[in-house]
Image (cartoon, rainbow, N blue to C red; front, side, top):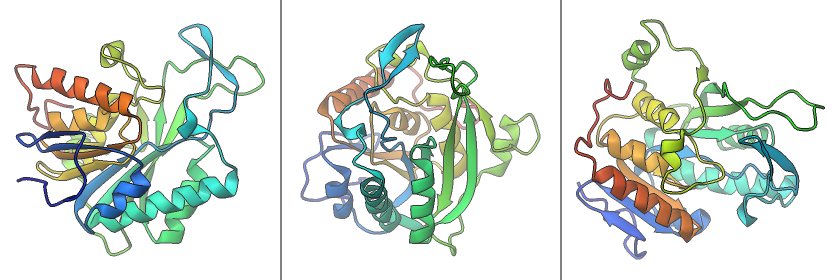
Length: 275
């Protein structure tokens, strides 16, 4: 099914009708309001964490700047929360009645997001603790090593009857109920061959999220598209995809990754093959 109905007066940056992939270039706060209400089945959001404060961190054994870009600079607690309320409100508007949203974050942003979701009336389903077994060490030696992120999973509202593919999750957990502690390594080198994004999420994380909470041909939205990991996971699992990204360089990276994926001989993965 074509997704032309989503936005009629904005030219996509990239479009693939065969696999139902559409990318838009721009600010999600300007593009999200143009999506029709109740049109998206699931949303994954990796928002700014507001960590670009001039500090340093360790990456691959080297000291590097934590600055990621203008989009990640904090404007202050109140302004940050207002921003979170704005995009969350638009995401809630475009979700279908039974749609769900997944949002990643660290302590710097996740509490604002959780509060904003309560203000807007989302139904919080789970908080997932994503554990990174090979996290970078803390250089100052004055804090515990940061090795986790929180992923909030929520339904549109209290009346939502959300999708949860319980049996598939159980299979992925060796026949037991899957717990909310997920051990998944950061993106592998092969996921960054075509280019890097400073906050890129691992493909394994997105595949698990999509398998858990969507069905084939569902429409998935990522309003902070980044390097397109959600797009790759959607393509592999036969979900329709809409991405919004403000930086054209990361849209170009997404297109390169998609085109590379489309060249692979076996594109479509069943849920079991993706476990």
